[in-house]
Amino acid sequence: MGSEDWYRGPDWDAETQALFEKKIARARRQKAAYLWIKADGIAAEHPEDAEALFERSLACNDEFETARALNARARARAMRGQVGGTLDDLGHAARLETGSGSGLQTAARWEYAALVATGRHRDRYDEALTMMGSPISELSFAGQVALAFIHHDRGQNIRARRAAKNALKRATMDGEVAPGVPLPETPDFPNPLYDRLLVIAGLWDEKELGPPPPVWPDD
Image 1: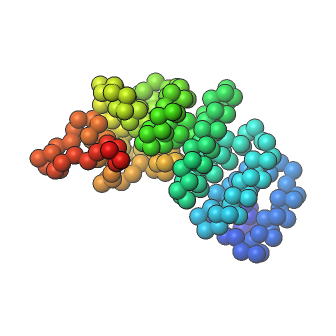
Image 2 (image 1 turned 30 degrees about the horizontal axis):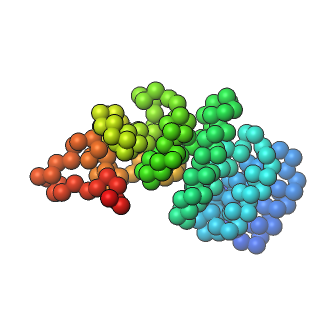
Image 3 (image 1 turned 90 degrees about the vertical axis):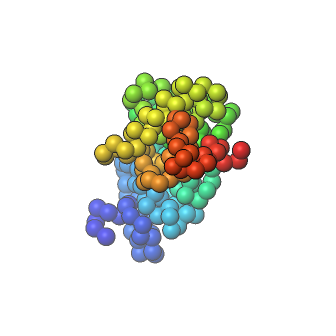
C-alpha cells in the first residue's frame, strides 16, 4: 500500500488498521472523507467495521461529505439486502442535496427514486418524483426507470411507456453509466429489469419471447 493509499482499498488487517487510526488521529482536514472512503473500500469483506467507520464519518457533521457518506453507506447496505436502511440513507442524502442549493454531489436522488419505484414503495412516490426535479431528457438511466415504474403503477400509461422507452434507449448508449443503488451500473443484457421495462414500454414480443413477465413480481 502506498503512503497516499492508507484510506483506500479493501485491505483491513491489523497493520492496516493501526496505520489508518494513526493517520486519522493526525488528520486536520477531510477526516470525514477519509473515514467513509475507507468504509466503502472494506464494506464487502468487513461490513461491521465499515458500518462503524461510516458512523464516525457522519458524526463529523461535514457539510461537504455527509451526503457522500450516506450514499456510500447505502451501497453497502444494499449489498447486504437491507432495503429499509438503503432507502433511508439515499433519501437522507437526496434531501440534503436538494435542500442545500450547492448542486448535485451524488446521484442519490435518482438512485433513491429508482429503488422506491422498482420496490413499489408507494408512500415515497411523491417525494421521489419531487427530488429528481430535472427535465425528463436530462435524467439518468435510473431516473428514467423510476418514472417508468411510478407512472405505470399509477395507471399513467403514456408517460410510463415513454419513460420505459427512454430507459431502454439509454441502456444501449455507448458509455452510459447509471448511478449506484440499486443500479451500480447499467445492467448487462439479459436482465429481469429490462424484461419489466419492455412490458411497460409495450415492446414485449410474445411470439418471440413467450408470455410476458409480471411488472411486479408479487402480482
